[in-house]
Image (cartoon, rainbow over all chains, first blue to last red; front, side, top):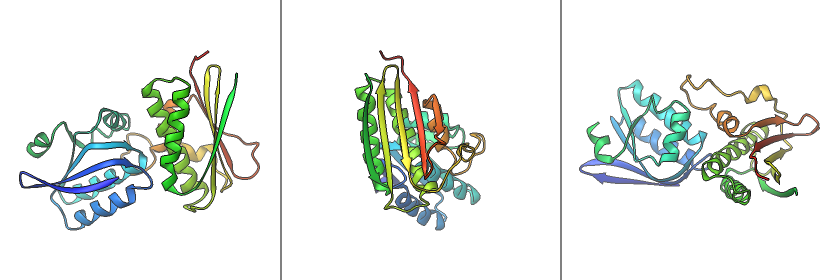
Length: 109
Length: 137
Protein backbone atom coordinates (compact mmCIF):
# COMPACT_ATOMS: atom_id res chain seq x y z
CA UNK A 1 0.00 0.00 0.00
CA UNK A 2 1.15 3.53 -0.69
CA UNK A 3 -0.16 6.75 0.83
CA UNK A 4 0.09 9.98 -1.13
CA UNK A 5 -1.01 13.45 -0.17
CA UNK A 6 -2.44 15.28 -3.15
CA UNK A 7 -3.81 18.79 -3.53
CA UNK A 8 -7.09 19.07 -5.43
CA UNK A 9 -8.72 22.49 -5.78
CA UNK A 10 -7.00 23.60 -2.61
CA UNK A 11 -8.12 20.54 -0.63
CA UNK A 12 -5.74 17.99 0.79
CA UNK A 13 -6.62 14.52 -0.47
CA UNK A 14 -5.15 11.27 0.84
CA UNK A 15 -4.78 8.93 -2.12
CA UNK A 16 -4.31 5.28 -1.21
CA UNK A 17 -3.23 2.49 -3.50
CA UNK A 18 -2.66 -1.23 -3.24
CA UNK A 19 -3.75 -3.65 -0.53
CA UNK A 20 -4.84 -2.46 2.91
CA UNK A 21 -4.36 -5.44 5.19
CA UNK A 22 -2.99 -6.39 8.59
CA UNK A 23 0.53 -5.67 7.32
CA UNK A 24 -0.10 -2.22 5.84
CA UNK A 25 -2.92 -0.86 8.00
CA UNK A 26 -0.63 0.15 10.93
CA UNK A 27 1.13 2.59 8.55
CA UNK A 28 -2.20 3.98 7.44
CA UNK A 29 -3.36 4.28 11.05
CA UNK A 30 -0.21 6.19 11.95
CA UNK A 31 -0.75 8.72 9.13
CA UNK A 32 -4.44 9.19 9.88
CA UNK A 33 -3.93 9.50 13.63
CA UNK A 34 -1.24 12.15 13.12
CA UNK A 35 -3.80 14.27 11.26
CA UNK A 36 -6.59 13.49 13.71
CA UNK A 37 -4.42 14.48 16.68
CA UNK A 38 -4.13 17.88 15.02
CA UNK A 39 -7.95 17.93 14.87
CA UNK A 40 -8.11 17.91 11.07
CA UNK A 41 -11.60 19.18 10.30
CA UNK A 42 -11.95 17.12 7.14
CA UNK A 43 -10.17 14.15 5.63
CA UNK A 44 -10.81 13.14 2.03
CA UNK A 45 -9.69 9.61 1.20
CA UNK A 46 -9.32 8.52 -2.42
CA UNK A 47 -9.91 4.79 -2.86
CA UNK A 48 -9.55 4.73 -6.65
CA UNK A 49 -6.41 2.60 -6.61
CA UNK A 50 -7.16 0.47 -3.56
CA UNK A 51 -7.19 -3.13 -4.70
CA UNK A 52 -8.09 -4.86 -1.44
CA UNK A 53 -9.16 -4.17 2.12
CA UNK A 54 -9.54 -6.56 5.05
CA UNK A 55 -11.05 -6.16 8.51
CA UNK A 56 -7.92 -4.53 9.93
CA UNK A 57 -8.09 -1.85 7.23
CA UNK A 58 -11.77 -1.31 7.92
CA UNK A 59 -11.05 -1.12 11.66
CA UNK A 60 -8.54 1.66 10.96
CA UNK A 61 -11.24 3.72 9.27
CA UNK A 62 -13.83 2.96 11.95
CA UNK A 63 -11.41 4.10 14.64
CA UNK A 64 -10.57 7.26 12.68
CA UNK A 65 -14.22 8.04 12.13
CA UNK A 66 -15.00 7.69 15.84
CA UNK A 67 -12.18 10.03 16.81
CA UNK A 68 -13.15 12.59 14.18
CA UNK A 69 -16.80 12.51 15.15
CA UNK A 70 -15.83 13.20 18.76
CA UNK A 71 -14.63 16.69 17.77
CA UNK A 72 -16.98 17.31 14.85
CA UNK A 73 -14.55 16.39 12.07
CA UNK A 74 -15.60 14.70 8.84
CA UNK A 75 -14.09 11.65 7.19
CA UNK A 76 -15.14 11.31 3.56
CA UNK A 77 -14.31 8.33 1.36
CA UNK A 78 -14.66 8.46 -2.41
CA UNK A 79 -14.23 6.35 -5.57
CA UNK A 80 -14.44 3.03 -3.74
CA UNK A 81 -14.18 0.09 -6.17
CA UNK A 82 -17.41 -1.93 -6.31
CA UNK A 83 -15.92 -4.84 -4.44
CA UNK A 84 -14.92 -2.61 -1.53
CA UNK A 85 -18.31 -0.88 -1.44
CA UNK A 86 -19.83 -4.33 -1.18
CA UNK A 87 -17.64 -5.14 1.85
CA UNK A 88 -18.71 -1.90 3.55
CA UNK A 89 -22.34 -2.70 2.73
CA UNK A 90 -22.10 -6.25 4.11
CA UNK A 91 -20.55 -4.83 7.30
CA UNK A 92 -23.39 -2.26 7.51
CA UNK A 93 -20.72 0.44 7.48
CA UNK A 94 -22.12 2.17 4.38
CA UNK A 95 -24.64 3.60 6.86
CA UNK A 96 -22.03 5.25 9.07
CA UNK A 97 -19.39 6.39 6.58
CA UNK A 98 -19.77 9.23 4.11
CA UNK A 99 -19.10 7.48 0.79
CA UNK A 100 -19.07 9.41 -2.48
CA UNK A 101 -18.74 8.45 -6.11
CA UNK A 102 -16.33 11.20 -7.09
CA UNK A 103 -13.88 13.63 -5.58
CA UNK A 104 -16.10 16.58 -6.47
CA UNK A 105 -19.13 14.98 -4.81
CA UNK A 106 -17.00 14.34 -1.72
CA UNK A 107 -15.85 17.97 -1.57
CA UNK A 108 -19.36 19.32 -2.09
CA UNK A 109 -20.97 16.75 0.21
CA UNK B 1 -10.24 -37.10 -8.01
CA UNK B 2 -8.98 -35.27 -4.94
CA UNK B 3 -5.97 -32.98 -5.20
CA UNK B 4 -4.21 -31.16 -2.39
CA UNK B 5 -1.63 -28.41 -2.22
CA UNK B 6 0.10 -27.46 1.03
CA UNK B 7 1.81 -24.14 1.61
CA UNK B 8 3.63 -23.04 4.76
CA UNK B 9 4.51 -19.42 5.48
CA UNK B 10 5.99 -17.63 8.50
CA UNK B 11 3.45 -15.94 10.77
CA UNK B 12 4.52 -12.46 9.67
CA UNK B 13 1.75 -10.22 8.30
CA UNK B 14 3.87 -9.49 5.23
CA UNK B 15 3.15 -13.03 4.04
CA UNK B 16 -0.61 -12.44 3.97
CA UNK B 17 -0.21 -11.21 0.40
CA UNK B 18 1.38 -14.56 -0.49
CA UNK B 19 -1.50 -16.40 1.18
CA UNK B 20 -4.01 -14.34 -0.80
CA UNK B 21 -2.20 -14.99 -4.09
CA UNK B 22 -2.08 -18.76 -3.53
CA UNK B 23 -5.70 -18.82 -2.38
CA UNK B 24 -6.87 -17.00 -5.50
CA UNK B 25 -4.92 -19.32 -7.80
CA UNK B 26 -6.27 -22.43 -6.10
CA UNK B 27 -9.84 -21.16 -6.35
CA UNK B 28 -9.30 -20.26 -10.01
CA UNK B 29 -8.10 -23.81 -10.69
CA UNK B 30 -11.42 -24.95 -9.24
CA UNK B 31 -13.14 -22.65 -11.76
CA UNK B 32 -15.03 -20.73 -9.14
CA UNK B 33 -16.80 -17.47 -10.04
CA UNK B 34 -14.70 -14.34 -9.60
CA UNK B 35 -16.96 -12.94 -6.90
CA UNK B 36 -16.71 -16.14 -4.85
CA UNK B 37 -12.93 -16.16 -5.34
CA UNK B 38 -12.79 -12.62 -3.90
CA UNK B 39 -14.83 -13.74 -0.88
CA UNK B 40 -12.63 -16.80 -0.34
CA UNK B 41 -9.48 -14.68 -0.59
CA UNK B 42 -10.77 -12.33 2.09
CA UNK B 43 -11.95 -15.20 4.31
CA UNK B 44 -8.63 -17.09 4.23
CA UNK B 45 -6.72 -13.83 4.82
CA UNK B 46 -8.91 -13.14 7.85
CA UNK B 47 -8.45 -16.66 9.20
CA UNK B 48 -4.65 -16.37 8.92
CA UNK B 49 -4.69 -12.88 10.45
CA UNK B 50 -6.57 -14.41 13.38
CA UNK B 51 -3.85 -17.03 13.74
CA UNK B 52 -1.20 -14.29 13.93
CA UNK B 53 -3.21 -12.17 16.38
CA UNK B 54 -4.80 -14.77 18.64
CA UNK B 55 -2.95 -18.09 18.33
CA UNK B 56 0.55 -16.61 18.00
CA UNK B 57 -0.21 -13.31 19.78
CA UNK B 58 1.74 -11.32 17.23
CA UNK B 59 4.82 -13.57 17.06
CA UNK B 60 6.13 -13.37 13.51
CA UNK B 61 8.50 -16.35 13.30
CA UNK B 62 6.02 -19.20 13.80
CA UNK B 63 4.45 -21.24 11.01
CA UNK B 64 1.07 -21.19 9.34
CA UNK B 65 0.26 -24.10 7.04
CA UNK B 66 -2.58 -23.98 4.56
CA UNK B 67 -3.75 -27.13 2.84
CA UNK B 68 -6.03 -26.55 -0.13
CA UNK B 69 -8.05 -29.54 -1.25
CA UNK B 70 -10.00 -29.57 -4.46
CA UNK B 71 -12.45 -32.40 -4.71
CA UNK B 72 -15.71 -33.15 -6.40
CA UNK B 73 -18.23 -30.57 -5.29
CA UNK B 74 -16.07 -28.86 -2.67
CA UNK B 75 -13.17 -26.53 -2.13
CA UNK B 76 -11.58 -26.98 1.29
CA UNK B 77 -8.87 -25.08 3.12
CA UNK B 78 -7.40 -26.23 6.40
CA UNK B 79 -5.23 -23.81 8.32
CA UNK B 80 -2.82 -25.21 10.89
CA UNK B 81 -0.88 -23.44 13.59
CA UNK B 82 0.99 -24.46 16.74
CA UNK B 83 -0.13 -21.57 18.88
CA UNK B 84 -2.51 -21.04 21.78
CA UNK B 85 -5.66 -23.14 21.64
CA UNK B 86 -8.64 -21.25 20.29
CA UNK B 87 -12.29 -22.13 20.68
CA UNK B 88 -15.12 -21.71 18.24
CA UNK B 89 -16.86 -19.52 20.84
CA UNK B 90 -14.02 -17.03 20.49
CA UNK B 91 -14.75 -16.90 16.78
CA UNK B 92 -18.17 -15.30 17.04
CA UNK B 93 -17.28 -11.72 16.14
CA UNK B 94 -19.25 -8.66 17.06
CA UNK B 95 -22.78 -7.83 16.01
CA UNK B 96 -22.73 -6.04 12.67
CA UNK B 97 -24.95 -3.38 14.23
CA UNK B 98 -22.37 -2.64 16.90
CA UNK B 99 -20.10 -0.24 15.02
CA UNK B 100 -16.62 -0.38 16.49
CA UNK B 101 -13.16 -1.40 15.30
CA UNK B 102 -12.56 -5.15 15.05
CA UNK B 103 -14.78 -8.23 15.14
CA UNK B 104 -15.58 -8.36 11.42
CA UNK B 105 -13.15 -11.05 10.26
CA UNK B 106 -15.28 -13.94 11.44
CA UNK B 107 -18.28 -12.60 9.53
CA UNK B 108 -16.19 -12.50 6.36
CA UNK B 109 -15.17 -16.12 6.93
CA UNK B 110 -18.66 -17.39 7.67
CA UNK B 111 -20.40 -15.62 4.83
CA UNK B 112 -18.57 -17.61 2.13
CA UNK B 113 -17.64 -20.94 3.70
CA UNK B 114 -20.37 -23.50 4.38
CA UNK B 115 -18.29 -25.26 7.04
CA UNK B 116 -16.18 -23.38 9.61
CA UNK B 117 -14.86 -25.73 12.26
CA UNK B 118 -11.92 -26.14 14.58
CA UNK B 119 -10.67 -29.73 14.43
CA UNK B 120 -10.67 -30.82 18.07
CA UNK B 121 -8.56 -33.89 17.24
CA UNK B 122 -5.51 -31.66 16.84
CA UNK B 123 -3.66 -31.85 20.12
CA UNK B 124 -1.21 -28.95 19.86
CA UNK B 125 -2.27 -25.72 18.23
CA UNK B 126 -5.28 -25.35 15.99
CA UNK B 127 -6.61 -26.64 12.69
CA UNK B 128 -9.35 -24.53 11.21
CA UNK B 129 -11.32 -26.34 8.54
CA UNK B 130 -13.10 -24.28 5.92
CA UNK B 131 -15.25 -25.91 3.23
CA UNK B 132 -17.11 -24.29 0.36
CA UNK B 133 -19.54 -26.57 -1.47
CA UNK B 134 -19.41 -25.74 -5.14
CA UNK B 135 -21.41 -28.29 -7.06
CA UNK B 136 -18.44 -28.76 -9.43
CA UNK B 137 -18.20 -32.31 -10.77
